[in-house]
Length: 370
Image 1 (cartoon, rainbow, N blue to C red):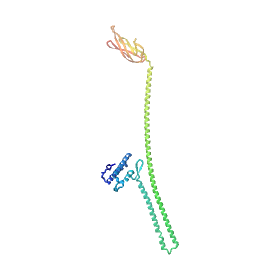
Image 2: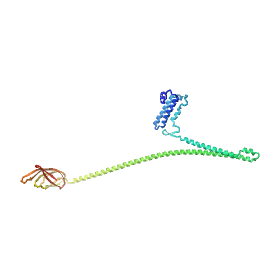
Image 3: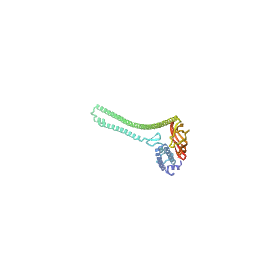
Image 4: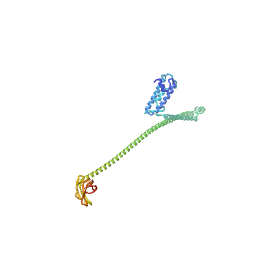
């Protein structure tokens, strides 16, 4: 990196003094370090670490003499100190897996509280021991003074008693000192036990929190599983309903097919031909009807007013009529008309068909079968 690039990177002119370079370097580095600490992803962390390295390279380019032992101003930033800011986590934090940090600032107040408890216990023991020793001295006069004031009058046995009293007082002081030391040790042990208990409680709380998270995840998984089972049950129910409807439709279709087959069988069992009666009731003019009737493929000429035709096709049949009709007149003459007619009949074996006619024009008569 050139000096011009380094100056642009730090935002200072090429002729900037070391304090100016230091000030801009620290300001930019603090900003990038804060972004690095708050970066939520590994990609952003790598980006901000690269920016820190770029700032450091720019600083070393503009201040190369610092690493060679020359004297810069004492307030110039130390690269070692700045590197510690970027290569290690902030004070009061510890690194945990995944590149994240966890605060350890709570340890300092705890250690301070333990230290205060221990010092208080030691001070209490010292003061109590000192007061007890002072009380003993006040209660028992100085052996030398007693000896000086009663030297001529006190027997030899009294001197021996005085020495014995001094030895007992020293033993009592030693016993009291040991008792104070034991109390101090007990107080220290109690403080250590409380600290250990606090750590155990914190560990238990963490374990409980982890167990609660696992339980919540298990409940969520169970809820999702039950929801999936419910969805599958609903899908199965709908499938069963659809299959039931399809089965009902198949049965209805089978019944319709059976009915059609039965009807067709009945139709097939019916005779295809039969006999019908052709009846003509006559008219007031005593006309003679000489016609030819075709019913389906059967044709015949009725020879009387009650003619029975056999071999006539049954069922829905078309008919055609041709021939003539002649009627006598009062003068004895005979007039006639051409007979025509057509239509359809639904015939059954043994039916009676009636013939009727009417004069519909000059020389034309229309005949119908009913």
